[in-house]
Amino acid sequence: MTDRDLPPEFALIARYFAPLSAAEPGAFGLGDDAAVLAPAPGNEFVLTKDALVEGVHFLADDPPETVARKLLRVNLSDLAAKGAKPRAYMLATAFSPRIESAWLAAFVAGLAADQRRYGVTLIGGDTVATPGPLTLCCTAIGEIAAGAMLRRGGGRPGDIVYVSGTVGDAALGLAVLRGIDRGVAPEAARFVTDRYRLPEPRVDLGRALVGLATAAIDVSDGLVADLGHICEQSGLGAEIGAARVPLSAAGRAALAKDPSFLDLALTGGDDYEVLFAAPPGARQLVVDAASRAGVAVTEIGSLAPSAGVAGGTLVRVLGPDGSPVALGRTGYRHY
Ligand code: ADP
Ligand code: MG
Image (cartoon, rainbow, N blue to C red; front, side, top):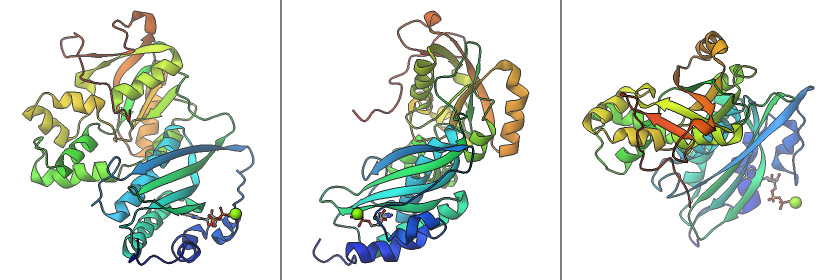
């Protein structure tokens, strides 16, 4: 800590973080104890918080820009899955001894880039030092018409289950970064590591699903685990077809090399796609919403009364021949 070149706390906030607050007058240039914020008339706030810990959610040698953007994006992904429009965010940064001003400048540049991309503004936070690993917390604040937030628990029997984009890419990206060979071609390495480091929150899709999806969640723990959360909250079970789960070209290549990649695609976390349910009658509206949002959505299965789901698990994965696929685990668990 002794030879690090960070300015004292208040100068650090003024130099690095205050410029990011300019677009929200209620942030008072980060010069007060707290910020004030009001939603537009008829709206309410949607609030979420995620923490990233070095060595757990990102790697110590990840570029600071992508650490910053992932921090913001995992939070925006929660807002996206709830149908909310991103508005502002707060940060708590616990800097480890290795963090110096060059790292911080790059971190702030990453935040600035994604503030522009997603239309959000920093409105406050806290800055501390830690002897432990770099730890970053973000609280994201979005807005939605009062009462309209998409919930996990609104699914109904017979609803179709959809997922956006492709799954399994982030798990492949992490494998590449860890030097594990899962058959990723050299030309696909950048695509999968970007999927791990820079998830794409499906903000436009989420907003387009308001009033259409009966239940929604973002895939952060793994597809099967997160579908399980929808099932629990909806009091239902689900059945999905393993062969229907959308894979990228890199994912298909990994599956061809090793069939166990299917397990990873279904249970690996960090994809940050939107997993949602909608009644069969809304199929065309879902297709239209996805095309307006410019993101693919794929039907992967359906919700059903949980009584019909055998074996104590709420989510059944069926193989191409219709028999259940056994998974090693359902998703990532911290403990
Ligand atoms: P206090 O001691 O009253 O809690 P601080 O000195 O921690 O206030 O913070 C001063 C101001 O700077 C507050 O507006 C706070 O929200 C903001 N701030 C502190 N750290 C950060 C940070 N990492 N990111 C954004 N804003 C921050
Ligand atoms: Mg104070």
